[in-house]
Length: 241
Image (cartoon, rainbow, N blue to C red; front, side, top):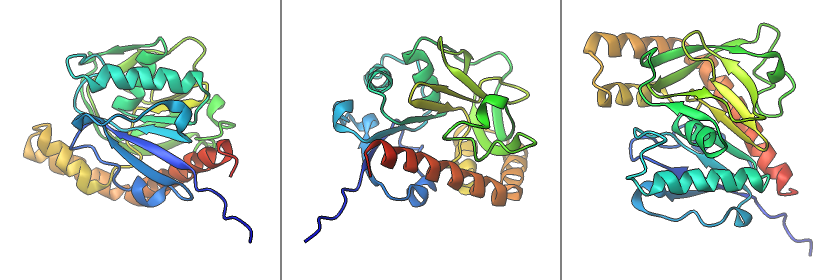
């Protein structure tokens, strides 16, 4: 009897109770998701036991070392890059990745909060990138949900800069086997509404933000799924499946 191929396991590190995997839970095809609640003290274990790593966002900063899971996840991300493990950091996850590999993050960055839909401008380097290349078409543009005040202000040495927005330049980058995206490709309009409430946005501003996200959701969902499927494929390829 022929043995079934092993299903690669993607370790998803959740940093905050209010920042779930959301729509990525249905889009990560061909991998088994292992959810680790770092915010509750769960230990993800060593990277050499992982097939892939995804670090989600959170309301804390990448420098909140009074929260034990923040420096622990920075260390985990640095280990993942050294081990050439397929890795994706989203929002806070991207900021943690930048700090872990020698970049800099500004807490409460001067341009202010970037919330709602962000206009992405993909750089030429993104066109052939194995993760985001399918999104970086001839016009190298697109929309994604976003909600952040902290920002990467210096990329790690040797990082590949992949995308910018009018307000914040470092919207996507790659460091070795790891990608960071400042935007939220996993977020539904409903989750964005919840974040607007938690962030204390005025009602009119929150409603306008959610309306804009919902209006673009067909494209956002398509591109979010494309990115999730591409990352899952990278995990499968790395695991030899």
